[in-house]
Length: 160
Image (tube, rainbow, N blue to C red; front, side, top):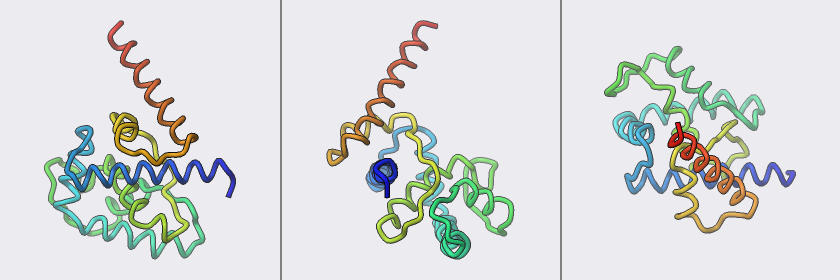
């Protein structure tokens, strides 16, 4: 594995661990995360089916990366599944990042399969910077860049 792949894998694991910690403590950092926590608590069968699809359809094909949004779309459109939720969607596509992080946290050490893309969401860089200490310099640089960009956006918003 190249150094860039190692950094990418570590970055994903850091995001997943931070998400898992917030989920366990019930301390969401934004509205989408709060909505996901509530949805996931009310619909644990969705995550079970998410993992089953990855195990039965992604891994046997030799894929090492997959799109969590693709799995969510499969569940939304091709599965006969009922969910209990507050919004009008059977399964909101905004939840794909939550399922991606849960899957990474639960299975990354056991499987060499990763969701394709994980990006920092609002408030996440600050959370990781304050709460996760064992991060390599390369991942710390990714987080610092995200914090710098967020600070720049805040300045632009105030000036407008």
